[in-house]
Length: 336
Ligand code: NAX
Image 1 (cartoon, rainbow, N blue to C red):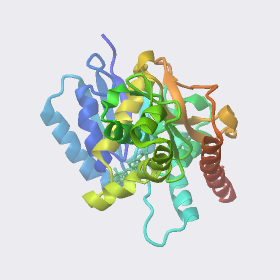
Image 2 (cartoon, protein in one colour; image 1 turned 180 degrees about the vertical axis):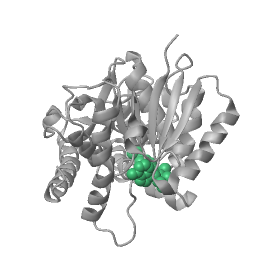
Image 3 (cartoon, helix red, strand yellow; image 1 turned 45 degrees about the vertical axis):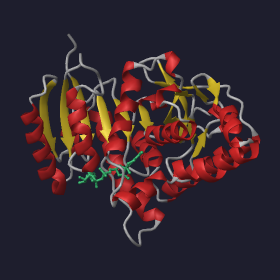
Image 4 (tube, rainbow, N blue to C red; image 1 turned 180 degrees about the horizontal axis):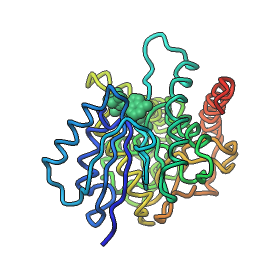
C-alpha cells in the first residue's frame, strides 16, 4: 500500500479550492490506491471558509483521506508537502495597474517559494493555478533555492481542454478522439491554441476542417472564431455565468496533476502545460511557457521537433513577448 501523499492547497477556502478538495479526497487526482493528507493554506480572512470545507470533507468519510489541516502559517502549510497546488492569488481589482498586480502577487508567491524550499519534501511538485499563473510560477521558482526548475509547472490545461471541447463540437467528434492539440505561450488572451498537428479519430484536424468548411473558411474559422474563443473563454464564462470558471478550472488542475504524477498513456497523445523553458522552440530560458508535453510519470517533458509554420511562429512569438515583458516588469520591481 502507498503511504499518504501530502498535498498543500493554497487559497483552499476559495471557489476553485472548494471544487478541488472533494475530488482530490475522492481519489480523482492521484488514483484510488493513493491515500492523501490535505493541508489547506489560507490567509486569515479565508481560514473560516477553509475550516468549513474541512468539516464537510470529514462528513464525506472518504476512505483515502487521512487528515485535513487548515493553517495561515506558510511554513506549516508546506511542511513535508509532496505536492503543492498554488491556487490563492491576488485578483486584479478596478484601477489596478499591471505593476501593482505583479507586485502584490510577488508578495504571495515569493514567500511561498521560499517556504517550499525550506519545508517541503525533497520530491515536491509545485503547480501554479493562481493568475498571472506563468509569472507567479516564475517568481515562486526564483525564490525556491535548491528546488529543481522542472518541479515548477503552471496550469494551461484548462485552455487545452477548452480547445479540445471546441474542436469536438465543430467536428461532431468525441473529445477523447482528439489528440495533439497544443496551447503555446502565456495563460492569457495572447496564448496560441494550435491545431496544426491535431487529429480527430486519427484524421488530421486541419484536413477535416477544410473538408467541412472549405479551405478558406476553415482558415478563417481557426483565426477568427476558434483561437479567440479559446483564448477568451474565461471572459465568456464570466459573462454568461456571472462568475469565473471554477469547476472546469479544478477539473483541469486534476488532469494536470494526474498526468504529471501518474503519467499519460502514449496513445492519448500530448497535452499542454507551462514549464520552465530550457530554450525549446526558441523560448528564452527560464520563462514559464506553455508547450506540448508528455509525461512518463516522472514529470512533464516538452515534445520537441514539431514543424511550425509562419502563422504559428508569429503567434507564439507574440505570446512569448508578453511573458518576457511580465518578467521584465517583475525585474524592474526588484523582485527577481
Ligand atoms: P477565490 O477568490 O474564490 O479564492 C482565492 C482564495 O485564495 C481566497 O480564499 C483567498 O483568501 C486565498 N488567498 C489569497 N491570498 C492568499 C495567500 N497569500 N495564501 C493563501 N491563500 C490566499 O478565487 P478562485 O476562483 O478560487 O480562483 C483562484 C485563482 O485561480 C485566481 O487567481 C484565478 O485568476 C485563477 N484561475 C486560473 C486559471 C488557470 O487556468 N490557470 C483558471 C481559473 C482561474 O481564473
